[in-house]
Structure formats: structure tokens, C-alpha cells
Length: 301
DNA sequence: GCCCAGGTGAAGC
DNA sequence: GCTTCACATGGG
Image (tube, rainbow, N blue to C red; front, side):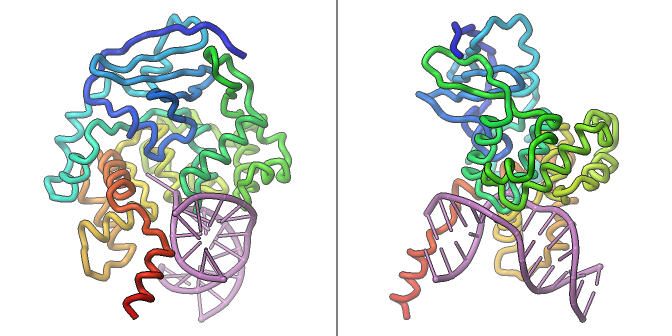
């Protein structure tokens, strides 16, 4: 479904749109001719960034842009957050490598479901799974001229009605029962996601940990990317690597100790610091290709 | 062929 | 309490 475009420019500085939309916090953005195309709630939107700010195009008239301003956190004081980071070399390097990286404010259900699907998957694969899920269970939304069909993220109610086999067909493998059960708890009203906004980060985390398929890491992602608890510090394999290599090089440090270090070292905006470290590791120290490494090892032998 | 990926839950000590 | 393992699927 296509329609005419509505355009609006938001004057905002120090906003690295590419890094923000492409840094593993949201999975529904794709690059298109120098712009980023995605769906927020029920809105298809195309975003472009230049010296004047961020320009948004939608496929329908918009009178209230709060949904977009809130999602992108356009009025957020990034400089104030950077000032709270620890003054050490790894943090400096991470921030300098990726100026303007932000955290989004996503809808809790989409964020929760997405990260349930994220476990031991690469980001491109998570994007693929979620793409299939939206195509098959989401609602079609109006798109801009020349763009193909696009879909909203499926509701918990819709996914709760799906079968495990249908979900597995979206290539999510063993994550299917987790998503199905969690969707059921939310669809039935047994678990209320909106209630978490009013809790402390510790209590909100405790609640999320009750959901099937949600452990500490995924809970922290949802607390950080959806609810805006900026002290939440998700530790995945990349952040673990960052902590080991950047803060404890050539030392044997237990996972427990790394967690304790993370909990005390990075301050009130630890989650923001975490995102910079995550992005820094992924862009500056990408995974070596196994074949090259093995070939090299053989040559040395 | 092999290792790894924004992990979790259950079973074993 | 901790450690180990299975769980699907695809990229490199």
C-alpha cells in the first residue's frame, strides 16, 4: 500500500542516526539510498540525517510527532550523559569512535519479543527472524511511493494465537516456545508490561525474569532500550569481550568479577556506556574469519 | 567441517 | 551454590 509523503525536519545535533539505528538495539531498520526505513508502532517512516538535523517522511499526514520524538529521544541531553562516564582510556576510545550514538526508547512488547529472539543469534539473523514474524503476523501499514509492503510488529495477542510450528517457520528455532509462552502471559493480562514503568529498576528486572526465555541479559536489554533505565547494563558476549580486553588485558578474571566491576565502574548511565563499548568492539574488533585464522595457524606450524 | 552468534533453563555435581 | 549441556539456524 502506497501513499503520498509527509515531511518534517527536526533540528537536532550530535545525533548519529546510522550508529543508533544499526547498533543492535532495534532490528527493523534498513538502509535505503542514504536514508533509513522502518516501522514505529503503526507508522512507516523514512529517516535522513544531515547538517540541519533529522528529516522524517511518512506515508500519511501526521499532526502529532510525539511518537517519533519519543522513539528517537530527540530532546535528550547526550552531552550531559557523556560527562558522567568514567574517565579512562577505553571509554574515551569508545566514545570518540562513535560520536552521537544514542539509545532509543522502544515499545516494551516489541523490545521484549525481539530480545527473546536474539539469544545466540547474530544481528543479521535476528533481523531476518523479526522480518518474517512481522510479515506473517503483523498488520500492513501504508508505505511511501515506490516502497514495498511493510508491517507493524505483531501484538502479543496475535502471537499468542499462533502455533509453535508457525513460529518455528520464522526460523526462530528453540526460541519459539519462549516467545509463545511469554506472548500468552501478556495477552491474557497475567503479566502487565505497563506496570513496570512505575517500578524501580531492581523490581522491574525481577518481574521480567519471571518470563520464559528472559534471563538477566535480555531483561537488562528491555530495561534499557524500552523502559529507559539507564543504569541497566546488559552483558552479552561482545560486552564481555570489551570488559576483558579493555579493562583486564592478559588477566584471568571470573565472569562474576566482571559483573561486579560493571555494576560499580560505569556510573548512573552505565547502560549508555555499555552501548558505546558494544558498538566499539563490533566495529573496531570484528570477529576474525575462522578459515583465515586456521590457515595462518597451519602456516606457522 | 568448524566455531560462533546481543542466552536461557535444566540437569548434574 | 557452581558448571555443563541442549537447544535451531545461518554466517564466515
